[in-house]
Image 1 (cartoon, rainbow, N blue to C red):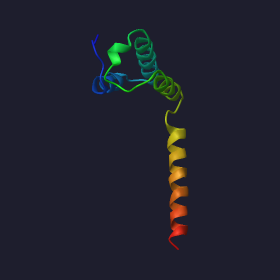
Image 2 (cartoon, rainbow, N blue to C red; image 1 turned 180 degrees about the horizontal axis):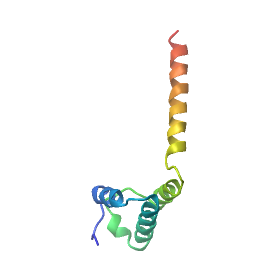
Image 3 (cartoon, one colour; image 1 turned 90 degrees about the vertical axis):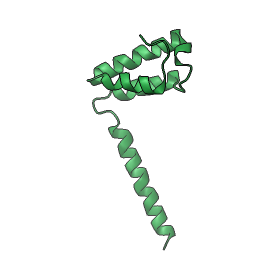
Image 4 (tube, rainbow, N blue to C red; image 1 turned 180 degrees about the vertical axis):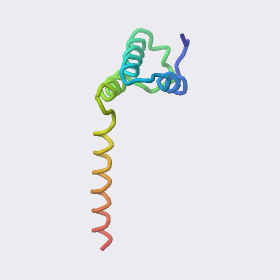
Length: 87
């Protein structure tokens, strides 16, 4: 086990998880570890709430689909507003 987590090794370990179930398990383990030994995450800005949000998203059958659709819709609306303003 790593003595201290930073952004790079958190991402590297997460990337090694092959299935969404594995990713959720990894995130749950990291959340528990942060709760028990917060000093291991000293150089990261990740919070318990961040872990909760990631766990929720990766638990879905199609992670990030809804969020990406919302972003596209928001950008489309913003582009339409800008187009009207430039008339």
